[in-house]
Length: 361
Image 1 (tube, helix red, strand yellow):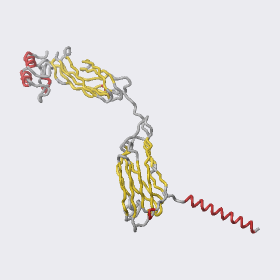
Image 2 (tube, helix red, strand yellow; image 1 turned 30 degrees about the horizontal axis):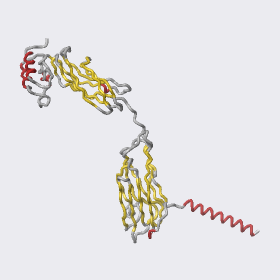
Image 3 (cartoon, helix red, strand yellow; image 1 turned 30 degrees about the vertical axis):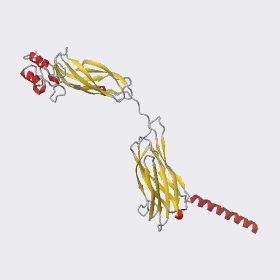
Image 4 (cartoon, helix red, strand yellow; image 1 turned 180 degrees about the vertical axis):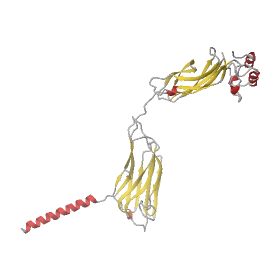
């Protein structure tokens, strides 16, 4: 009977010892060098955004020095700054105690690496517990776009050594960090052309004579486009031209308006770029400019700079005063270039003099 009780007691004691060992193992803290946070995710465009991580030593006993080498992917991340949190005497969240011996503190932004090594010196006490070695701030320099894959970037602790007094190594694990840049949806390709400006080179043109009009158009879409642009005076089409523009390109086209057949009066000039197949944004295909006056030939002056319906000495003197001027002259006035040959010469003066005394019916 006594033997059976003894065996039972031994079994119970052994079970308690095993349970105690399991409990101690489960609650034991393991030393590690970790990146915190261990995961950072960007689901929307993060280009230009900054974030900060910390490299920490956790659950260490008798730490007296460390040697840590860290790296990142320079295709996606740009180094901004770092903050070393050593010694703990100066940084409550840091590690190691004074006096310390800095051994290495080197960033290579081209390779995307950082090497830091520091040791305590006698009579500094050993460090126990957890603390931050350094923080580092990065900027996202490139965010992938589909069909590119997601960017899975490892913030890698590729070499780590922890040492106690005397240089004895401290076993530990490493926990790298990860940054995920989820590839953005590819932008929708679009067809989009626009008229940016209509610029008549005269505000007054003699009836039956010509003037030039500059129209600037742009291809704001993602495809090379061939399209027509028509210039109008009120509702009357003046001229249509066809051009081809690569994506993102713009150009200025010069039209010539022959006013023969147009009655004298005020005309609003506007341009229309014919919409291309698949274009949805057509509001900017039309651009309306101000007035141009088709006037009696030689009538270039009047109240507020507009023709007054007659050719008098004021008109003749005005044209003569512009004699010899060309578009490069600081006082160039294209309204005085009656025949639109880009200079004010005797032809313009003679034409104006021949109209002297005429008035609108």
